[in-house]
Image (cartoon, rainbow, N blue to C red):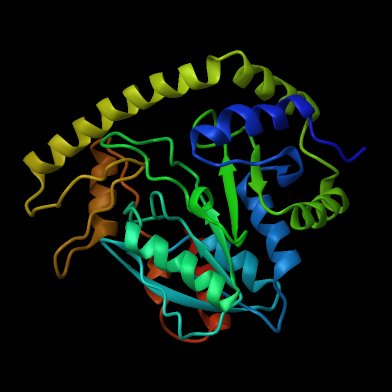
Length: 306
């Protein structure tokens, strides 16, 4: 049977999404096996060889890979301290963004750019996929409302996940969209794996409705803020160059080195001292150059050798 656990869907509709400023009826929600499955289902439904997806650069490599497998073209737009800078004179059908905490730079999309993005989506009739993978993890100031919360034209498809907060092994996420799109995704999900684990869905629904979910989220945020402050202080004390303002939230800390800085060498040395540092994949540097096919071939090769 292709079915959601109704308790989980009701919990999302009544407790989780309203806290983000999003109003969604059960028929607007699809439970998925995480964001990866959501992106795969959406790419299959919305992209083909005659369409184009735009996304951030640097950005989420797997989103590019998933879109590329449909035969679609891919445009890459740069990211600065105010978030992504789309070129709306370009032709694209889908815009994939991570506006709350951009992946991987962790910057938040500026309010004026959010308004313009929604305006352009209505004018040019493209869809926005909003991947809101860690918006709850905010340490300073109030969380920025998702694009979906202020969308009046129904062009924002919202993706959420529980993996980042509860556990990476819990492959549960969800899509919020217009009912006709959700029905199409539901059919594609059925042909893929019917539905995510029913027992995991029910357990998560009970966790949310009991009040433990939001209580755990608050506690988790306090713990992460303590770690975030420790990292920020250590970077200020020990790095030989200014690292800039700490992020307002999120699960990562993006640092740009001076000219000639070798992140791979630093990561190797840090590991020897018991500190794990993840250098940005060299593949991200290729995202604005060359053909899409060549870019993604390089991504596959470089990550495969990692």
